[in-house]
Length: 141
Image 1 (cartoon, one colour):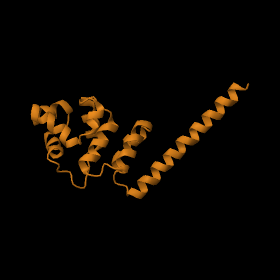
Image 2: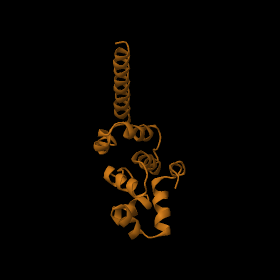
Image 3: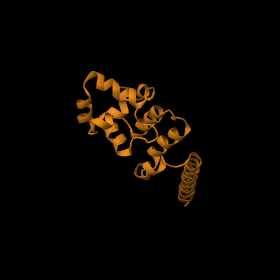
Image 4: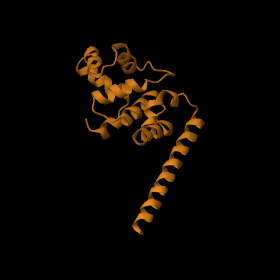
């Protein structure tokens, strides 16, 4: 399935479509995620907690999707797929350590999260400026 089409679905709908075509057992085997976790996702039984990053990584791998795509789909499933999840999904693509700290990040308050994302964006801009200056210095020598 095209990633743009996938982005229109939330994670529960996406997994449910495969469960409906095959079975809960086959989807669990395909993803390496327990049947009970797959059932929680499909039945939207995640209320305040979110699927863990290792679960999202397994799902991404099984369906040949990027982790950031699956994170955005999980955000849509949780009903808060707005700015916070979009920023996190984009950051996952740029900053590998974010994946390791995903569970801590989703427990942050929205204000804490936005401060962290703003700081990371600022750091990235500083690094880009440093590289530009180095490249400019090298071209004048």
